[in-house]
Image 1 (tube, rainbow, N blue to C red):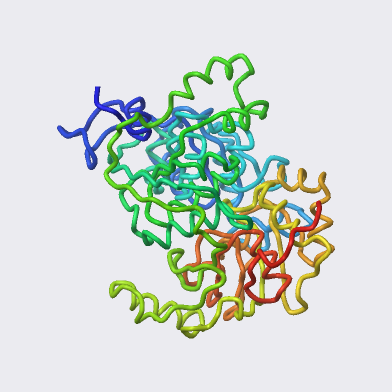
Image 2: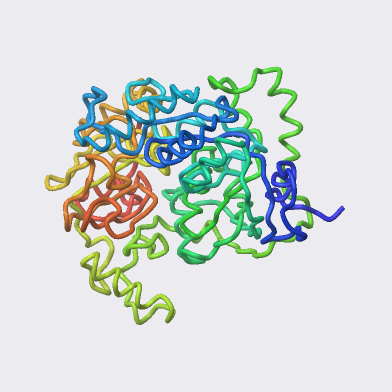
Length: 476
């Protein structure tokens, strides 16, 4: 039998039937989907469609709902939302959960958080599954060897009604990361370096699999960061072969299989890997040792560079990137040649489904311990879930952030996107651990610089973009 990629193996196991005569990339198929997660922002139209058609949800137990996009992250959580439209979304979400028999985590639920943080910490993401949801960063689940991808509202309705989706088989791409990451360089820097290398559309139409020494040595939370941000280079799906770190991460979590079932599953899951000799449609190689802490300078995640560099001259870039670069610099209020470390910031934000897990908060707190946020910077941290928040408080991380001058907020998407109370004012410049720096992403006229949580902490202390390698971590 011809060697197969991990993506094709999982898709083949979930294929109900082919919808055309082809079997390769671009072919149409009907795919069984194991699980989905819903939020209050992308699901309302789907539920309205089900109501109008008089349809039920086929497998309510295969869905979970989480309020995360529009809720307030104010430290004193009451459950109330100031914006009337946002409150209506939350109320309708709860109504849909009751009427269709789907479990929902509302704002006051102790398990509430950002959907792509909540599902893994529950133990609900398992190797070999197919998980589709109304958010592009569903690709996060590839860190567990699961095929996760985002879908539109009409697809959510179809999925809820049938537990299936019509899909196009993707091309496959392999990113081999050789060597080890240097001190001070994180998973966020790695994926930003890849996006810069191949461009914002470099993996469009592909399932992107990561392999190599640098990937193997990462903990599961770092792997989730990489898979999460892979959509920013166009990948629909990101994947990593599951290993013992993944299996140990799952074990003992609230919704994980029993110890006996996990023991039986391990040998099956260990076989979830691309076969030797499997042919990928595209290959890319990255040397981990050459990666430095990264910052974005433009309005697309591929417009970034090493922190010890400078804002590029658009004329020095490939011709097809010059116009976008010039527009980005105008929006960002930057001039070519300005050193990144000279760029002053107004805000610092740690959060999002990319970088708000416990390991991320530990990394940032190690930089902040014994230091203070610069006087003119407003800094805030929004843990990825209520569970992460409690775990951080149990370790005393909240005190580190508060004593440094950060606001210690509740969980939610927060300032990742301008859909709640946490927004930038026009012209404000923010060091951010989020995944996107599009125009207006964090607020109309807001200027976003993407980086790792530790780099955000360094910038908050310096009052400008800063090289985390110049700030020795303090003992926790």
